[in-house]
Length: 419
Image (cartoon, rainbow, N blue to C red):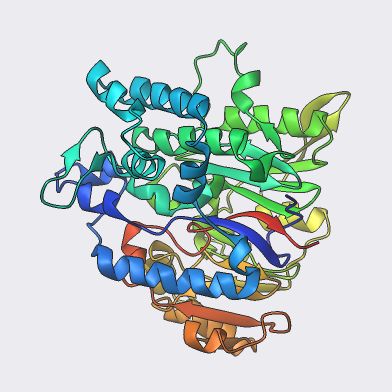
């Protein structure tokens, strides 16, 4: 495994096509808080949209480059000890009784069926399904279960209860699946044991970006805490995994839950951003503060504070001017907010300047088209030579997927890219 940046050619990626877990989400008044979803997806349509998206990724990475999360989980469950450990950990997390625990360990239950239960929280068909614990519908956003840089994976520690099982299952996959036999695992909780302040330690992959092999950009806000980033900076810098970490302070709000909901990189000179948080030209707002951490006498210390400038100021300091800065929603404040909500800033680069976006973000797409980008449908993309295509946006039909509150980058967790 090796992940040198956000935009090197995709080699291997983890995805999860939405499945029965979405059928088990109950319609409740606090659904948005309990399950982190604003609406119930039409599963058949959402799965079809996701499959179309994955086929485009397969066109680039090949069959061996696409890994369904559920398949990886099924494969490690074939080891009896791993199965016992996972069932025990999930049973403790979800507070299930001994009868359910023993059922999940039963040899009568296939590894594939157990994998499905661990994700959906239930078994059986739609009408006879038995519920053991809550579903994890957000697993379709595999980006958040961890983050890779180089040959290292950073384990996620989700902020919301409904996502804790995702992080737990991912930890077992990274620890025991053969794909990750040579991968170094970084768990910041190893370094949090001596923290006595009572501060929360949460980190999710949507806040973590590998700008290059030496630079990590990490957002703080609703899902990732400052303490978690400080622990991460100390660990990665002291072990020589990176040379610098740029922390971006975001509003702790649902709309800006992760850094990649407001800023994504699709090439060394090309990025997409949400102007109200990052524009240095808007005199009515102050850009989100960015702090650069580097190693000083063995300790991770802030060596640059972007204030009163923002993230772009911090990036320019290390040689990233990003001359091609595309505004999410174009120049209109109305459409900037509307399209940020529908993931117009959440692009996924499959290779340099070749990225995916929901087709509904028309103003954002228009900005790319005006700059000379080709805009193609998934069907058109599948007819192109993926090794030669450049400056292209693939407009994905995400009418249902976008209602889950996550875009193309959210739905992908690259674990390897070609150098």
